Image 1 (spheres, rainbow, N blue to C red):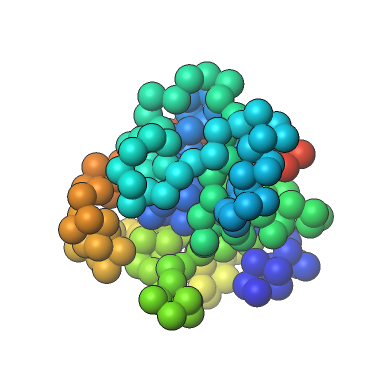
Image 2: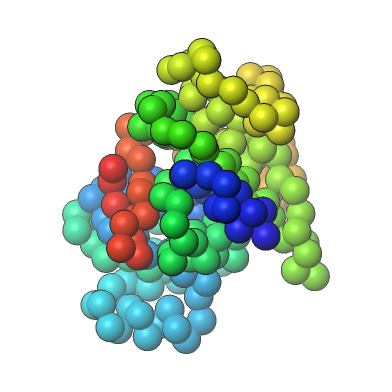
Length: 221
């Protein structure tokens, strides 16, 4: 709902899902992959068959290509990858037929996104959040500071940028960044054996890639 509301008043949406869709997507695009967002299920499997793509599996399997950023480090260039997730990917998938441009932001590419959007009009930052076991939305620290990193870099490139109170608060949170492995989502992933994913997601400004949604898939801007 938040993304839909912002789409009605913004020129660009920045989807921020640090653990892990935005980070995994950025890693995949760094390798030269083209990535389709999706909600998953049978329609994702059908799409994979239709476009001769690889469908990322469930991270819990610890096998093959999944939402785990570490699993995507060795992707071959030009890989066609469908990358479902219940949060960031689903938000991007819902925006496929919308009018605003959609880019993916995270801690890894915050400066790159800020540079790419420095001459843009109205920008909507969409922290994806997480889900509780009953499916309800759970706010997440990592997406707050991820959105804050983008806001902070936007203002660094153009000090005249006017931030909303929410974006300003997120930027302030980023400037006091705490280790992701101690926040709720990060601690859960470490406990499940995905400490490397948390480490990759924690790398601030390590990537110059900006994934942009073009004709249904994310490619490098």
